[in-house]
Amino acid sequence: MIEKVYLIRSESINPYYNLALEEQLYRNIPANSMIFYLWQNQNTVVIGKNQNAHKECNLGMMELEHCYLARRSSGGGAVFHDLGNQNFTFMMYLDSFDIKKQSQTIADALRMLGIPARISGRNDIEADGYKVSGNAYQVEKEHCLHHGTVMWDVDKDKVARYLNVSSRKIQAKGVDSVRSRVANLRDFNPDITLEMLQEALIKAVEKNYGPLTEIPVPTVSDELLEKYHSYSFRYNTISNYTIIVHDYYSFGEAQMYFDVDNGTITRVDVFTDAMEGDLDRKIKDLFKGLHIDDVSFRNRLSEVMDEKYHDDMNEVYQGIKKQTF
Image (tube, rainbow, N blue to C red; front, side, top):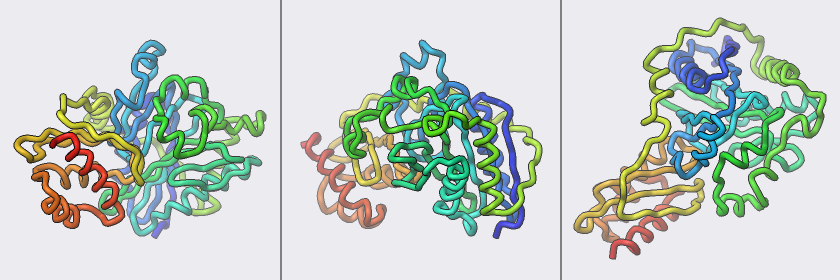
């Protein structure tokens, strides 16, 4: 139960600091409280926890134009941040976590500004059919996090240059291009300022959760700063694998890599934009050490994987068999 609501605003525009601060806050949520965190990153592509940076991003263009690459701790897809984008994070305990209410709070803030916002799809807020906010989630034991973007005046040309969105994903959403899917708040009303947006977000949180108490930014641990800066965390590079299965599934896009020795899968790596943050682990548990025969697969599938993913995993298994035998 939420009895106290805290506001924290980062003055930094460094993505590694802001993501480290977010995790520090997430690890230390006060009892019976919610934290609402406002932050911005300068010229950054942030990829999801289980994504392949080399596939999702145009890394050469990003390096040429001094764009940061960062990885967050939640699932979902890659997003571009600049100072025309406002990031927000809700942090609370599981007994108060309500994705619909949190998303509605953001939509309420946008409607205060005259934007015809509505919740749409698995992680979007739209206005007149254009995406203006994307969201992602993380749940670990009793700690829950919901963070997202609000596009106020983002450089959409950079979105198109830096992000490699697959044609399968675009076709699934029924649109022509990355650029055509998104809109800024200022496309609807050029008089909206960043300060107006921040004020509306705070008012909407207070309307739905109660008065906010702004508190100072805590000191961020060196361990977390090192984590988000580190090359290995950001790129999560993979070795050469003998089998690659890549497709678009009910949970999102996934690239899966397998090594097989004498009919047994010995190594597995998974990259996906699935919203379920630990789905990669479940897929690895399903396939690693599996002897490739139908009976073994069916037995492991029923033990490891939620039924809603059975058809998807059968499709992956058939792709492995096709490349093995």
